[in-house]
Image 1: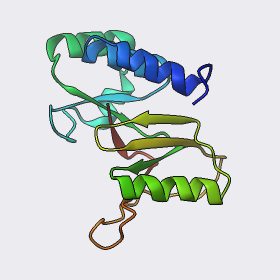
Image 2: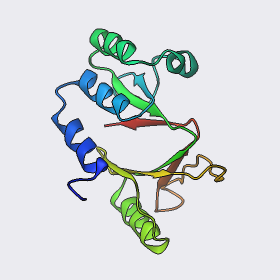
Image 3: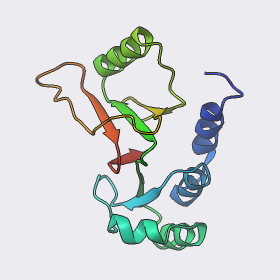
Image 4: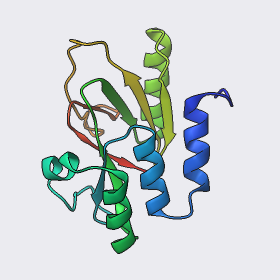
Length: 153
């Protein structure tokens, strides 16, 4: 990863963050539509639309000051797709797909079990959220798009 890239700088800031509040603010200021999650869960603590309609730095500070252990998710906007690889096999398959189609993610975020690869979509690009069951297909790559929720590290 290029040390001058936006991806590198964001990852560096996230690793240096002291708590969830700092992480949520870093993600928000980088353009992520952050949403609070219950700890150790993918369940949001707030309904998406009311939270997003009032999303601002003050709301983030208020929320994570009161609930410092809550995790951070984000709602994928219309112009992004996130490919989520949660195993070594999935990651190898994702790298192969990117190489085969000459794709370069705009952002790569390391997670506890793998990586999220972020791609900007051209307007009108057809894409849908999909999970590939690891028991049926070893690739195990989830496609997160258009108002799906992604857990952030």
